[in-house]
Length: 301
Image 1 (cartoon, rainbow, N blue to C red):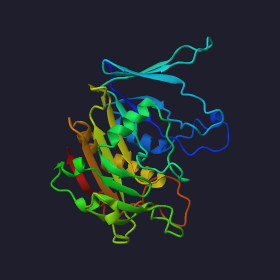
Image 2 (image 1 turned 45 degrees about the vertical axis):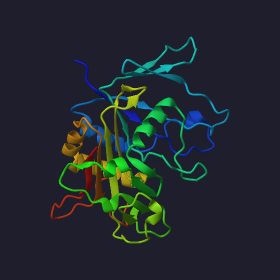
Image 3 (image 1 turned 90 degrees about the horizontal axis):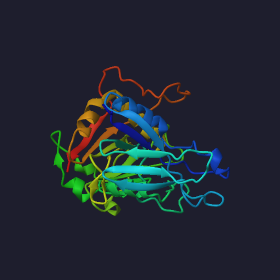
Image 4 (image 1 turned 180 degrees about the vertical axis):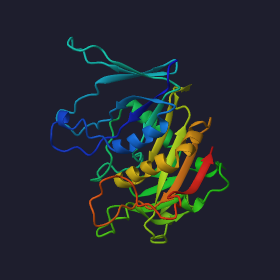
């Protein structure tokens, strides 16, 4: 019996001046994906890493190496290189498979910002970001606003704190404390992030997001599922994924059984021990065994 597969849809780090061939390995948040894969391993097997190397930044602007085709519920990535030394390679992603994203989706990153996540412009990328737009009215490096569709959603676990619908984060602030990775600066129940007021939250906590779409809609047909799991910067995302494996595995299984889209948001403090070089990703453990993740929003829509 064929097992369902999970594919890592990887976004790429900001390229340097080195040749493309020397930077193919620079995928973002692959460590976070490894933690998430452990959560999924009893139900899905690993399929493939799907590279999403940005366009327009390497010498000669090389084209994509494959064509993207969708037919009869199967997303096919077909190697289009005509080289007699290599076999043609086809990746088939079926409707019961899952694409997994462990990087904040760059839905509203300015193109000229130094730390923006660059895009490839591929058909698959467009489909993935189009689905994730359903969850977020705004999603950039320091601001997230949940969509009207999410705001109208039905609470799954007895309540939703909509004061975290719109959130502004402190990212790369000079002189910040080491435990304040992407800390929340301000939040409110607003559709317009311009209404946020500065510094109404300064406890060092941040948010982690999990989105689930059971089937991406592609050309009017059901495609693969899409799971995203991220926080606001690389360190926070890595720690959020570690917490997902440790504390939220049953919740993720529940979410992925849903026949409708789901959003889960949890609040946590992304803290390593300060003043030392950490030798693992484990967060500081509390002696009272209190869970590190506080659920904030859990809705279906």
